[in-house]
Image 1 (cartoon, rainbow, N blue to C red):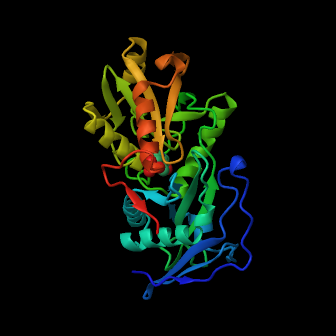
Image 2 (image 1 turned 90 degrees about the vertical axis):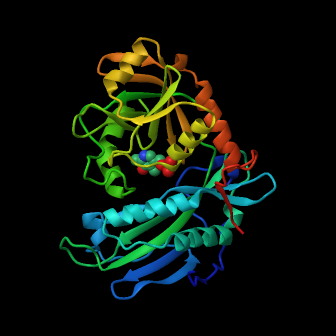
Image 3 (image 1 turned 45 degrees about the vertical axis):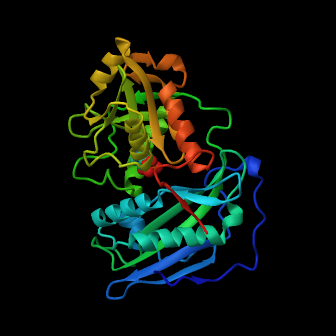
Length: 355
Ligand SMILES: *Cc1c(COP(=O)(O)O)cnc(C)c1O
């Protein structure tokens, strides 16, 4: 158990208009902070008023990107309760990211306690309009000052939160995606399975180019063979081909998404045959051309599921599910959001209430 010292702000901010919430712009009244020092371990767990912190410009994180993060949400039910979705999974993935990046781990219970306590202190910020939520961003940065590549001896773990609007204010809109042939997001042996800022830095150029050409995101291929599908943008990806569900296996360069895991568990429970295996772009486009590709969608905490309506690869272009959201994609969306916002029962024990 962390001993969290709480200092409440004497200037609580007015809540933003719940109908005009923009992702990642407005942060709540407080933040969670905790420091690490070699020899001392994690210490000084505290919740303080939200605000900027001073850093020396030689601070390690700015130069060598020893940094990891998580993304999760708190949901308000119709009865007014506030709840988290599978927070222990985020805590575990955070630990696995820590290990890869030589960052000292935080015990699972402490991670969940930090998140729960901050959300509880700032619970008036969890919006109650349909589809809205409080986005939670835990992260750790290396804070040693001075240049020179080595594992830092000091770190800051922080949690910040921002209210977010409905991802689909106008209903689930299928997106256009193309296969990225030049840039790769991650390689085996690298950091693809961690949530680190560096992975995102490497992915920005492809995302920008895709947008310039009128696509929402790219379909990433593996960095070794440039052949097998890995992810879509910063989401995991799934396909329904001839009645079976196929998703790229976790090879080390694919991020193990919690939405991915939840979708696979649901579909297996519903009796679908689900395959986690290598799937090449060639196989996917063949399936699209011979009519066996029934549905395609991305999965992630922000959107839950994102239906793919059009796939392009070089000069090939194929429409998926007639450009509409497929039945299974819709069922996954309805079930997951139902559990998250408490309008459907949670037979899996995925929901953790915030007291
Ligand atoms: C966070 C993330 C995902 C989705 O993970 P969830 O736990 O489902 O939110 C997928 N791919 C990448 C690269 C990510 O960073």
